[in-house]
Length: 507
Figure (spheres, rainbow, N blue to C red):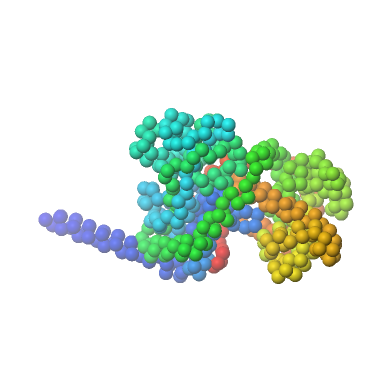
């Protein structure tokens, strides 16, 4: 009896302790430290470092929540979901955010907030092959899915309920996207998130959507255990965000489909990304470092100008990777426009010079977009468009407003009064639009957003020697993977400070 009483007392103490643990308030702790800690993955669907700073849906959502709490945001990526679970279970992170779906493994690490969205699950196939139209067609096909993924859980449920002979081949979690298996004809079909495919379809132009599975995947945040007040507050945050329409807008703005590529354009870009860029990437990186510009932005300019072809020549005599005119090349101090190293270095310096002419008060990324327009059409024509923009009561410092007025420079009623006269104003608009698309595709490449954050825009005060041409060091032969969704092979369990992205209240 004494032993039973001791056991009962121990159980009572354990229950009481667990109850207290579950009731432990988290919000006062977060506010006291002045910091919300969010663990994530380096993926274009969630969190990555673009040319103008941190981007991604989960970063936008986490920034908004930190602002709501009036604390700074510390958001950091780790290697995979298992590492995220360890961070959460150990209490090093308050929230895990990366388009997650609650599962047995996640329930052991934390507590799930209510889903904030449901993502369609797509069956994709290779262009020109038989298009799948329903679940029954999957039963005897070579079907690829990532091992342990939410998509595999959906297939397991379908197998139990409506398709008992359904089977599939597993792609290891650390390998390429299953869509890659379809692209390489190693599988007939693959299951992928609609949101993931909005990014990867640019990289796999020969892969198309067959149909959507009947079951969508819920996505949610997972918070650390024992923090019921944090769960409730996160739920309230997403409720308010959805009610205001802001959630739907954020999801649309951070989708990979905002600027869709045509099929042939996408194929050509991907081929050049793999075949040409590795020869010149090292020089783009050198030039970017010297003038304080993200190398991917310079590479996007180079692709728009020449498709990274050093022998390219335009009808008006511009030449080389950055399509420099003879006057620009002379002003930048280079002798051989066909030399890719010289062309890239000179193009970077010219971009930096134009950027310095744009008023410093204009924030990024507008300042960069205005710079690109001036780079293409000339600074004077850009100024004329900004004057027109202001005369119409719009913001001459906002690219969105100036973009709408640039084409007016081709209309006599406007260019007749413009200081620099006529301009083919639609051309800089198309120029900037296309560079924005190429830049996004470069940013979405696996591992490209894993670098420590800095100010990727042109530095206000360039370092000494920034105008010198780079040394003749051959570029690294780096082949960019075509897969989207891969994370770095390893990440430290306790990420060092340089991997953590800390943002003040309000982002």
